[in-house]
Image (cartoon, protein in one colour):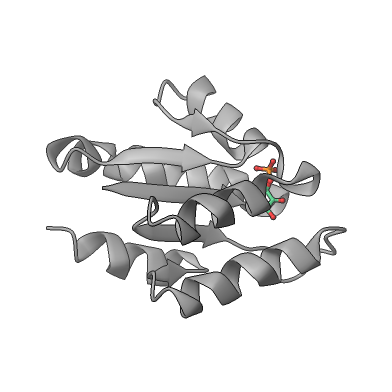
Length: 121
Ligand SMILES: O=C(CO)COP(=O)(O)O
């Protein structure tokens, strides 16, 4: 199983904490992580294994969307910052739309991410 992790800058610290809290569960279930570039770099710095795509504004969300439509992503956890402005909003909307098109579970905040990850147990 593969989970895509994405976090806007204002949520990256929360994201790292969340993944650290759950990495044993991910290991137990043989879950691979992929992430947009800077999100992935934060995870690597925290000692976690992740496949990095390009940075979000450079097309990382689009790369994850491409994997998703090929059936290679089983869940998306996207720590969005609803108070920030993002130059690549169109890519973000595209990724979220494709989650709905392909019925891939998508969490866009910590509470939903927690529930979704708990469902893996
Ligand atoms: O902007 C993002 C998602 O839309 C996140 O990209 P980074 O992980 O490269 O910061």
